[in-house]
Length: 251
Image (cartoon, rainbow, N blue to C red; front, side, top):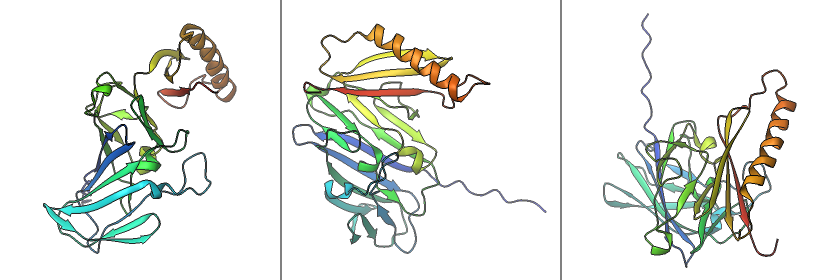
């Protein structure tokens, strides 16, 4: 008996652009090529990997609308963090704005000096399609203040160049939200620990940054950590690591 090959589901596609640096707004779209026939449900997580306290990230969505083939599609808000679109027989796109003014490792922050986000704050989950491929086009802001910005993330490039704006890919939604993104004029260095690349990205007030010493110290720490947990192989379990640090004036 011949096995019939399953048709691969088209990737859920996001775009995110820092729309208003002074207003702290990210503009995000998510396009679902094959939405659920009975009405596609979208939801924003109320938690973040590594910190499972309930958080209301959805409160920062300030505007949201849906369209398909150029026509407006009605959205019904189901609860604090989820919406259902009316059924459509064509690709469905949501457009929404996210207010980003949380200078912590958990959420999103945007101003004239940099942009940062975790996927749990900005990427609405497409219920029923979490296990399929996801991709995101991280676009450069139009503000002249961002003309020299770069992008730092451990997400796999899918058209974008390393440290550049463009398209990145994730195997599924869990992987998508497990890769924070920093953009701005950050200090950058790369070293290898047991052969695996490690990036150091430092944003903010760094007038006396000794990057060479930071590299040397962090390399020793990472190699000791890998040797402790992988004593037989001395090989890190991930192909690339990115350390992100925001240096501020008051600690």
